[in-house]
Amino acid sequence: MRFRGLLTAIALTALCASPAAAQLRLSVNPETAALTPLSALAGGRVAAGPDGWTYQWPSVHFEAAFEGQAVLIKVGAGDQILHLSVDGVPAGRLVKPAPGLYRLDGLSPGRHLVRAAVVGEMQAGPARFGGFFLEGGPNGGKALPLTAPRRQIEFIGDSHSVGYGDASDKRACTSDEVWSTTDNSLAFGPLTAARFGADHQVNAISGRGIVRNYGGMPGDTLPLAWPKVLLGAAPAYANADWAPQVVVINLGTNDFSTPLKPGEPWKDRQALRDDYVATYARFAQTIRARQPQAFLILLAPPSAENEIATQVDRVAENLKAGGETRLAVIPVGEMELTACDWHPSARDQQGISARVSGFLDQRPEIWLGR
Image 1: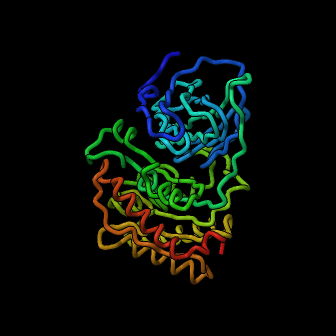
Image 2: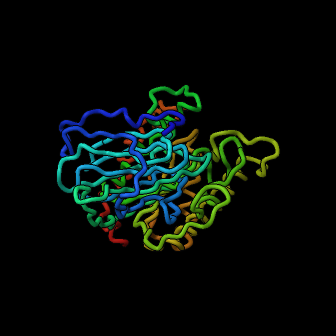
Image 3: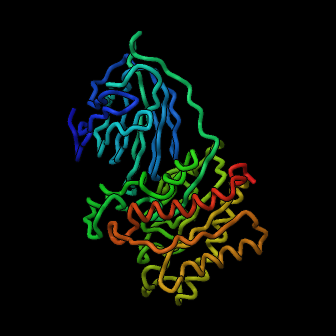
């Protein structure tokens, strides 16, 4: 099998202390017909097909349970970064892997939970995942049932929610370095979801805003992109099983972080602010209509003279005047912004997660949908 791009599939650390195995091994596996598919839970926004899933939003993840000492992982086309784990222990990292089967063995006998998590951003095009499999025959193992978490939480945002360059320890990054150091598993959304044992979606796009993208660049803003299963010209997303108890929105940095340019549709800064507030409120009402059970959290990211926080407060006032009662505004607070291109660092992401988690800790009734 030929490998394209950078492939770190074989670069593994021996996990001698792991409950899953004395030494996990990840390798390329030849195609074989004698495979037993495992029933997998898919998290995040995906388009399911007969031979797997297609996706483009961040933080998509797949899990399956089985008994056995090896599992096969089928990766499809698309430039992606996959983190693999078994029983919560890291088991390997696939960076731009070639499509095909990968074998993960060296597991101890017994029950295991395998997980593949997409941690990068894929604005350029979608990627695919083909599922988990056991080898055929009596020694191949046994599929086990797996129940989806009852708690669900959705995060809607921009590069801060994506985790843009958050694994980097420097601000000056090339585009390749941004791509390789963007790790959504370090971002505040997945961190918060893990804190509460919740499944999650991260529906975020770097550079996009509520009414204006970074520097006025073209492309769908989040209110236009959010209804779609993929980015760009794509069908609407529909999933009757997705009913999050909490929806967290973190948008505004791209709307206001750059000055208006000639030819943009707002005559001045105040017109931009007013459009932001009105469009954000309508977007929140759209989310409320689709997810009536959800508690809405509006994050207020820092900005010069608290411009964004002031507008987010106006959005909340607008919504409350219209009868919204299950809503809160949480300031993000100051950040060190030492990741790529002055983005939140991994420590900043932990701080945002701590603020959201602290709020939810004080309101356990939210998880009951009330």
